[in-house]
Structures are given as structure tokens and as C-alpha cells.
Amino acid sequence: MKTKILGTTTEEIEEAARILADGGLVAFPTETVYGLGADALNAEAVAKVYAAKGRPSDNPMIVHISSKDDLKALTVEITEDMEKLAEHFWPGPMTMIVKRRSVVPDVTTGGLDTVGVRMPSAPEALELIRRAGCPVAAPSANLSGKPSPTCSSHVIEDLSGRIDAILCGGQCQVGIESTVIDMTGEQPMILRPGILTRGNFEQVLGKTVLLDPTLNRRPGRGAEEKLIPKAPGMKYKHYAPKAEMIVFEGNAENVRRAMEEEREARRQAGQKVCMLFFADGEQRNAAHDLFALLRQADQDGANVILASALTEQGVGFSVMNRMLKSAGYNIKKV
Ligand code: TXA
Ligand code: MG
Image (cartoon, rainbow, N blue to C red; front, side, top):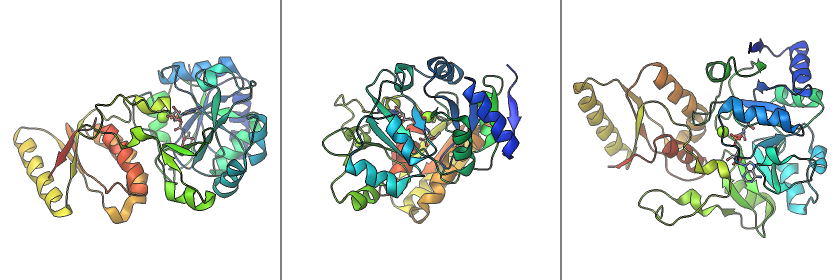
């Protein structure tokens, strides 16, 4: 298949929208990461997304809308809390899990009776969805297992020849995927952390927001209990660079020294080393850069990536969720 490379002029967005409306696949920029879109209500189109990404078919997709009002068409019940969150955080990097209406096909929700809905804020995304005239199912536009794409070259690298078109905008502002919050239980629960944190939601709702207990799991910290994450996508190997990756945890001084020693030893052994230093004061930059840096390390032919951990608080918690998965929980405490 020849993949059309499009820019973001009105004509090009219109062309991309027509492809979506006709059941085709278009990758497009959002403020979080690039998405791979299909008409969410067209089962055949959505099935092609799983094939293009090599994605397990039990992993549900987020349905993207271009106006808050479009939520009504997808869910039976809109609670006061859902209204508050939509009012505060849409358009933006928040996905709400809600009870689905039957218009949403099984293939879009991986057979669940709930659906994830998000109104992105990137203007090209909103314009594309609005012009397509349908809600747009879109997982991140990477091959399954690879780091999410934060610029158009990442999408071209992964999906060229596998989809109809790529709408090429600039770099994504946020850099990690949306916060997923489940609104179907007694209490709201975060299933995937993102740039919007538990604190942000608690402030708006004036009540406690839970964290999926599997989010605090890692080897040696309760991984032995067989907890299953509520977001099916969180159980898969994810975001993995080709290189081996080690995350160094401890006070900044010790971490720097240990990383430098490790670099020396690896170099002696003839390996190419990539060093990633992240700082607690710059969590948003870390979120913005992480996936792009992992892809760059692979491109540079690194054998091993050495990364410094962030404190798991606020946005740092969300970045660490991605970083530890990328490293396959290969952690060195120093
Ligand atoms: O920022 C984002 O959310 C990006 C952009 C493109 O919008 N999209 C994205 O989609 O990250 P994806 O498919 O890579 O991740 C969706 C996550 C998965 O972990 C999936 O299991 C979970 O959301 N999810 C989707 N629908 C769900 C549902 N009904 N119940 C529980 N988890 C759900
Ligand atoms: Mg993804």
C-alpha cells in the first residue's frame, strides 16, 4: 500500500478526513502522541488498525471526539463527575472510560461494555475529526510494543506502507499518552497515569480518586501477587527500545557516579552507550523527550541505554510508569 504523506493545510486535512469517512486509516498528531485513526463506528475500518499495528485484538481503543457534546452519542449515562471533568480537562490529555452505547462496535472496545473517550486539543486533530464527521478510534500510531510516536518521522518509520495516509504536523507537546480515568465504578480510578495527575482530578471533583493498584507494582514490590490491570493495554510489553535499558535509582550524586562507572565498563567491553539524565525539577521535559530519546538511541545504534530515575510523584510518577516499562523493570538501586 502506498501511504500518502500529507501536511496540515485545510485541503490536506479535508483529504485525510475523506479517507477516514471512507473507512481508511490515517495517522495524525495530537497534543500527547500521534494517533492512528479509523472511523470508530465502522467495525471493518477498526479491524484494519489492529492489523496495521500488529496489536492484540483484546486491547480496546480510545474514541476521539471534536466536541464535548459528542460524548452523548457514545454513552448512555453522563454523571455530574463526568461533566465536571469534561468541562475542566477537554479538550486535552484526558481519556474517560464510560459505559458504551451499542453503536460502538465490539471491535472498538475489545468486547468490553465500556469505551474510552477523549477530546484532544491539537487543532489539526480537532479539525480532522470534525471534518470526518464520525468519532475516530485511535491508538498511538506506533507498531505494537514500540515507543509511542511524538513526531511524524516516527510514524513514517513504523507505519509507512501499512496505512492510507499520515498527516504530518509538528512535535507533540506532551510526549506521553493521555491520563486514562475510569468513571464507571463507585469511585473514579486512574488506569494509566499521564500529564494530568491524580491531584488535578481530586481538586476538580472534590473527592478521592483511586489509582489502579497494578500501577504501584514492580519486581520486589508486590509483583508476585497476580493483579491484572483494568486497562488491557497496560499489561503488554511496551515502549521498548531495541537496546538494553537500565534505570538508576537513588540520590542524584550516586546515580551520576554509578551511571558513569557503568558507561566506562560498557565502553571497555566495546558497547555503544546512551546516557539519559532526567531531573526532578523538569518532569514535563522528561515526558516530552522520553519516547523520542529512546527512538534516537536505537537509531544511533546504542547497545545500552542508561537512564536516571525521577521521583515517583506527580508527573514524575507518569514518566516513571513509561520508563520502567521501557526498561523491562531493569532497575539498579545505588
Ligand atoms: O494520548 C492518547 O491517549 C493517545 C492519543 C492518540 O490519543 N492514544 C493512546 O491509545 O494512547 P492506546 O491505544 O495506545 O492506549 C489506550 C489505552 C490502553 O492501555 C487501553 O487498554 C486503554 O487505554 N483503554 C481503552 N479503552 C478502554 C476501556 N474501555 N477500558 C479500559 N481501558 C481502556
Ligand atoms: Mg499505545
